[in-house]
Length: 628
Image 1 (cartoon, rainbow, N blue to C red):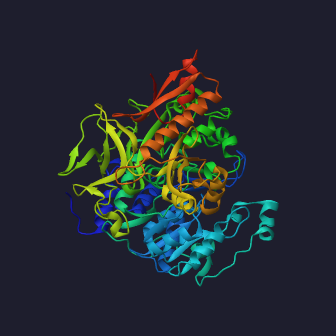
Image 2: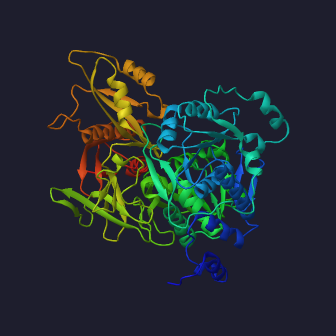
Image 3: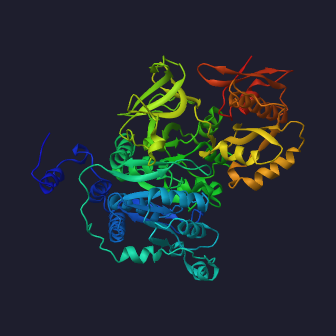
């Protein structure tokens, strides 16, 4: 290994080296500086407030992004943020979101928070991370983020400064003039100092950092787990893991010529790491359409024309978004697209086939998780893809399928289902979560993160996810804690037991449903239970789509509700209803446990049937099925 007397000598030598041969950057700011030096005028980040393909948009070059990140990092430093200190942000997608990610991780520890959480959950995360600064929206029409932020900061007295981003800056003409007249009033019950983000950052020096970055690797981000409900845990991410995710995309996939259409939220690891960090390492352009991304008004209707406008080469997506897109005609020129990359939930085979048929574009399905700083595996972009699998482990990632017995963990055989365990540069060994008790029993053999997902590895080394050891319901990529549903229904005086699970859904992957056992001799209409659930479950996403009363819930020998049997009931009910609605003379005879595929619906015809129509219908669900 070459050793240098000082940093200046090392930087001087590296400056003369071809970029591809240089060592991996030590920090995100170093990576940003290198890319700025290589591609100063190339576009880095683009954002449009409205979904119209002709709507105004704002683009920062790599030189401009470098200036924005530098001045923002200096601002955070001036507000007391250093290594170990936390700056949180509660923002929709906008230019400022990736700027804050990079600047926050440069000055201290950045903590993105999902704006869909309620104020109490946001406050809980702010308290858990000890955030001193919060970057959020200034009150703006049609969004309640500013109101949530104010409520949360009132419950998190450790927050000393609130920096407000004003989306008005993205407007022109009469709309810009009307915003001050339409801003909702936000009651302020906290003592934190409120500052204008743009003015405060612009007042800082933008040509160099006013502090020295630590030379050693360190925690630079806190990302909370979960989606819209439950109590999120907070995962710790080191700069090395963040850079590793960017190195994968920058080395294996993207170049400065690529344009990544990413309507996913920047508070999620999928957008922040494999996408933003890959752009940082490769010089590719990141495009964010509307603050709400895929949820934005008109985004799906205009999507293909947005691809055409930006000449996107990669589409970053999730199965629910693909399902929505396939309900609309491909009415734009998508010839620039090289690949769609899908994650967050299993991709139904029928959905893959429909997308490829409509667009001519392949989908590469991958797997990652917040606890591993995201990326674990992906189907090869130019190699063999196994639709339904999540591909092969990425370089420097070691995936093992393990089962635990009385003597410890043992390796599973080929195609044997066990728990997916991961070791890679993104796994923070021993201290994944900020709360020490949450790390108990989280690792196998000291270094392999136990993901809680069940899966198998086939003979070719492809990873297949077959279920979850944990009972989280995954609705469109958002995690829903079943305990939230169960606790709400158990508060009804006539309810004795509740089992909440995810039932199959062709669009969202899973939707929450609940099975209920009543107190002996009690009677209550299902409609009353549904109304009770709506009143006691805070997030709409977690309200069950189906509630069913059973004489007795299946239970284990120790009285614990046996959820696999409930899942079998839900699969049969959902599939039978879909087949009947389609007029197909087929029914689910049984749902069985398959050693390789998990729960499998076995179907049989009850008359003459078009088998291709059945395959088309059931192919929209991620759950496997077969003919008897």
